[in-house]
Length: 253
Image (cartoon, rainbow, N blue to C red; front, side, top):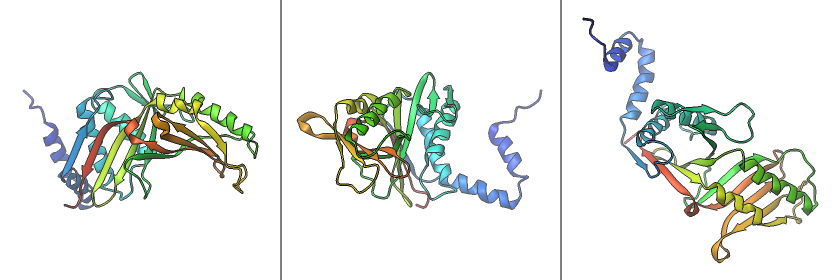
């Protein structure tokens, strides 16, 4: 009877044939996967708990080769790859799609990342939620209303919204995965819209303040009239969102 080769045995057999140059890279991955780490999984309505461990491994492997935080394209790839790894159907949205980025099971997800130097633990900033297109936009406040109406229409393209935030960088990395309730962002329809008429920029930027209980600011939409003409989300209170998971690791203990 032929003896079945285990995965460990197969990998050892292959690695034994590798030249020294390849062993360097393999050793880098092994070392970082073996470093002190902590994974906390809060919300299991996204996927299984073993997915959180696999996603944490993907974060760590990235930092075996880079000292820069995860970017959106890497977030998309890691989410789809680790979902498949634990037996969940997943795929990327068609190229150029303006709604969702990935599909996990039957759920469409819009994905964002945040890793700015001045990141605040309790407030979320999304530097580019959507492009505002090339429609009419100058110094007429009515133009902002048209732009504001395009936001809830854009939200219809996804079922859930996730943001991966890098709270701490090297040497001690810390990431958190947050779900931003779609219903929270839909409240922008009732926000207070204002054009920043004193600005010298053209088209003139604008803001939409969305408040909650006791007139507290829940978040702010910022209509950026710069070269990209994009919609930002500022000062979004994390306490209104759901923490799905947290990952911490130190590659050089």
